[in-house]
Amino acid sequence: SSPLAEGLRSHLSESDLARLGSARVGIAGAGGLGSNVAALLVRSGVRQLLIVDGDTVEPSNLNRQHYWPEDLGRPKVLALRDRLLGLEPALDLETRQEWLTPASAPDLFQGCSIVVEALDGAALKADLCSALLSAGFYVIAASGLGGCGLPPMTIRRLGKNFVCVGDFTTAADQAAPPLAPRVVQAAALHADAVLEKILGKWEGGVGRVEAAGGGGDEGHGGDAARARERAA
Image 1 (cartoon, rainbow, N blue to C red):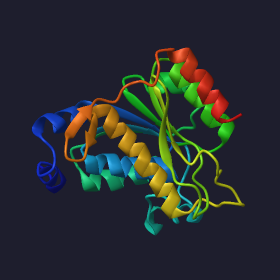
Image 2: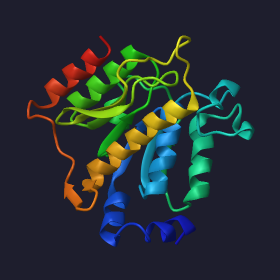
Image 3: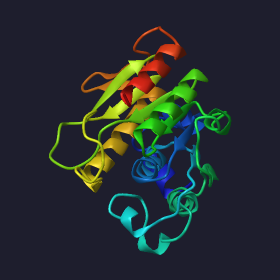
C-alpha cells in the first residue's frame, strides 16, 4: 500500500475507495486541463486512467500544466505518466501518444465510464463531445477559463450524460491568456464532477444526499446537439 493510499483511508470509506478504484476515466488531452485533472483524480483515489494526447512539453506549457523543466521535449503523456506513477505506483494507467479526432475517440475510450474533454479549439471540442455523447459516453467538458479576475466558474449539467465546467464566456486566447489559477480552477471543477459521478454528492452537515444523475431524459442525441451549441 502506498503512502497516498494509506492517507486516503483517513478520509474515505473502503466502499468509496473501491468505487473510485473500479471506475475507468478517459482524459482527452494532457495539457493545462488534462494534466491537472489527472493529478487531482489520482490524489482523490481514482486508479484507472486512459490519457490520450499527441503533443510534447514546451516552455509555454510550464505556467499552468503539470510538468517540470526536465520534462521539456518529452511526449506529454509519457511525462505525465511518470509524474502520476511517482505519486501512486499501483495505478492502472494507459497512455496513447496520438492526436484525437471525433472519429477515433469512441473506439479509443471504449471501456471508460467517464471521459473528460480537455482539448484546445472550440470546434474540435464540440465535435469530440458530440461524437462521444452520440456513442453513449458520460462526458465532462470545459468552456471559458482564460484570463484572471473574470466571472466565477460553475458546473452546469446540460443533459443526461453531459456536464460542462467554466465561466462559459472567456476563451483562453491572446486577449485572455491561459493562466494557472483559472486553468487549475477549471481542472478542479472537472475532477469534482468526475468524483460526483462516481460517488454521489455530499451536503454539509448531512452527508451524501444523492448520486450524480442526469439533467433530463432526452437521450444522447440531445446531449450531442448541446455540445455543438457550446461552440456556436
